[in-house]
Length: 406
Ligand code: PLP
Image 1 (tube, rainbow, N blue to C red):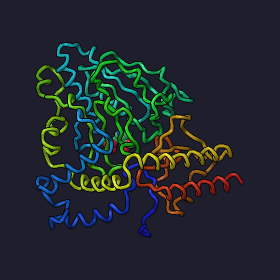
Image 2 (spheres, rainbow, N blue to C red):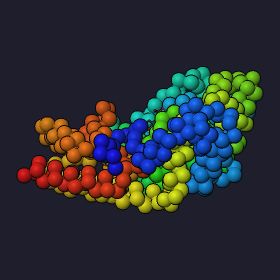
Image 3 (cartoon, rainbow, N blue to C red):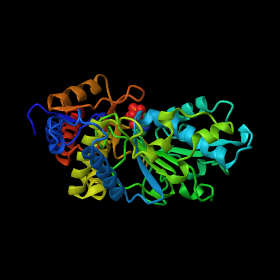
Image 4 (cartoon, rainbow, N blue to C red):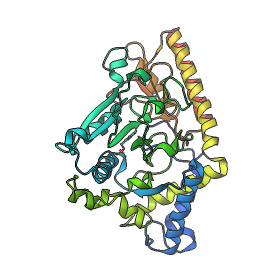
């Protein structure tokens, strides 16, 4: 590793593989032997057109995306999708049921942390007078103190509507460190079995902070899976969507029937029709993300990362448990709900958190401070964080526990 680089445990934008960054530096000067740098070349060039197609194919292969679904590259980040999923799926619902009154046009939101809460708030804002929000489950009601996002709710907590316009959840809550388990039938797995029995369910999942870290359970049952690239895939600026084709609708026809009009940059159909390039895509972000995905492929793809990420998180949760037993650390998430990607815990005692962070910084480990709304420490273990870096962090935490407990 270059000497000046540190171990970056930040929550995002986050570490990228060093070999990719070195290759990208070359591409900035000369993209695929065109003699033109990637930030300068036309997105309409045949070289870039071929590149973005290959990138799409790697995602399709890695995640086993069925032919019923399109892969779209857009801008606007996760926040853009908080709005876009509502607008596109309300348009779809309008086309399916033109005459329903607004109070029978329901959007189901599962709220398990600050990102799904923000998405639900945006849905409420955009749909005022056009649709109703149903909070299908709220994790705060199942928390230790009645107000924290510290758990994935039990299956008995969910109340889904019969024929909603959309059903929304966030697979990994980056700030709060809770994530749905991915073993089918686990008590903290997403309750697919409780969803209405319609085919073509409008199920939407925010995978921003877990995309490509492990396979996506029941991908084919989703209408939309989306992710900002800036955690496991590449730089900020690119948002990746996997959209079932019946959710790519004529939003103008829906607006004529009374649906909320959709800004053209947020409508899915122009992206689907134009190979994700109805306008200028984030060329550099696509390029670097493509390099990351090619490297993933060489390493063994999402199955490889699943195995490595499983080991990484096991080691960190284990040392946090050790710290808890000694009264030095305090876990912040209920057993079975902990995220593989973002592990949050507190450090007990006056000034102890500052000592923890300063000690880590001295050893070249950065990005460990928790989100201001949760406090404490957050260890983000995205794909580019290596097992060696994780081992070094675990060794440091062990040392810290021994010193504080003494
Ligand atoms: N959803 C999740 C799970 C996130 O972690 C984030 C950002 O960290 C967002 C949505 C918002 O994404 P963006 O900053 O790209 O708008």
